[in-house]
Image (cartoon, rainbow, N blue to C red):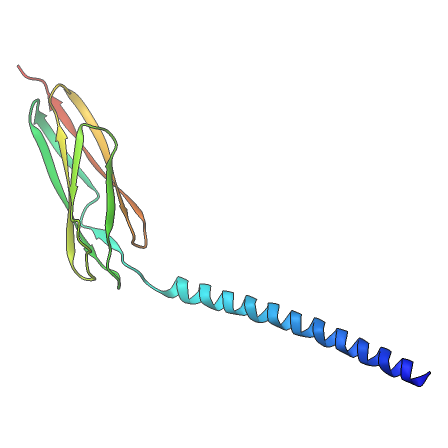
Length: 149
């Protein structure tokens, strides 16, 4: 009879150890995940800092191509790549620095507004999509197109 109790005791200890090991594995996995998030959130990536995010052309004569170049610096610690620059309409054409912008280096985004057939005020945006800390930056251009006389 004592052998039965001994076997039951061993079985119970085995079950408790199994539960303990599984629980410890889960705790270690959770701890590793939290440490990974902590390191990830403290790692500073590339950061685009524009000198100005808005430009006012003032008065523009109808039929001219109004262009402005937004300059920026990568103030982060890793290269930044601009993957796309999306204007809010077809009347604005963007051009941008296509190669990676290394930390401390500068780049440009140029917005050209076609004023032909568009008299009156305009306010357009250009969204800069990149791999930096802020993945989308919205630039703005505005002005008033004076009609041809």
